[in-house]
Image 1 (tube, rainbow, N blue to C red):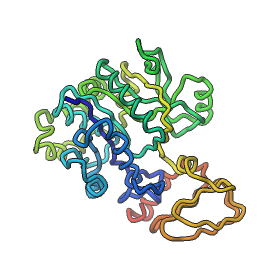
Image 2 (cartoon, one colour; image 1 turned 90 degrees about the vertical axis):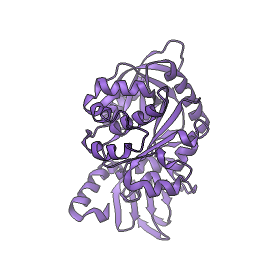
Image 3 (cartoon, rainbow, N blue to C red; image 1 turned 180 degrees about the vertical axis):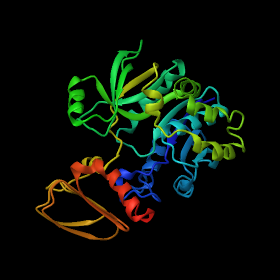
Image 4 (cartoon, one colour; image 1 turned 135 degrees about the vertical axis):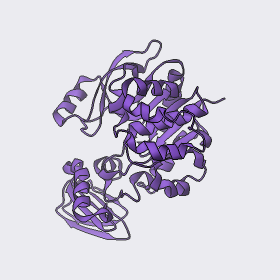
Length: 360
């Protein structure tokens, strides 16, 4: 029996990509590169050589079920776990682990975001196979670490420790540093022993559930109350009633930064979390002035190192823009300096507060 499973977290709103990513159509369901495949579809295709459709579990917000069914008709509907409220990644991970444990107590789980870009797909699959083999025989929480290429402030960092006995590229983790300042990111980069935290995790179901009981008991007790209902027709009603009471916190804060059995597999995957306009800019083809266009035509004068992303058959005429984001979708137009992209999430909150849900 194949005991390997994959959990794909696909319930986020992707607010840093507003206005392309909207509440009704967040970024994981969008085709950013003109391939005809959304980021979510690419994620599923990436893991299919490792697990069958019936071992892929999708955790998403209940409002996105129609999008899931349209884009991924081969995933059994019983494998789509619908969150009735947004509670970040820790409750998502805990619920999925309970669901899978009920199906297979020996399960090993790959836990992936749905919106990452991975260019070296064969290297990804080799890394996942090595990671699954490791967690199958070790009581370990394993994350993939990416060698940093620049002092990014939007990523978490992991400090490597001693190598795991018998492994060259799997090592213990000394500490996590979450989204440092630019000055600190430069220090971490220069040290040579810090990696970007990819947010890709591997563990056995029983290992992560034990970690929740030891390190995040307030979350564990919410889901432990459902013993006997997981993977049964009673599961949905139980989740609808209890899930909203789970604390909203990431699995990084709730578990990974506290656990003593965390390991990192150092990998080179051609990875980007594609979490921001800057990340999309860096990955996209550019004209001779360093400008990027997405879904539009551009007539530019004295414009450099900017990204123009406009929905619909439109032409953008711009003069004098350097290092800017110009993005339009539906009833919203965003024009901000690239260096202020980290403010977009706050901008979205202000738009929502001032003008209402229709604009986000």
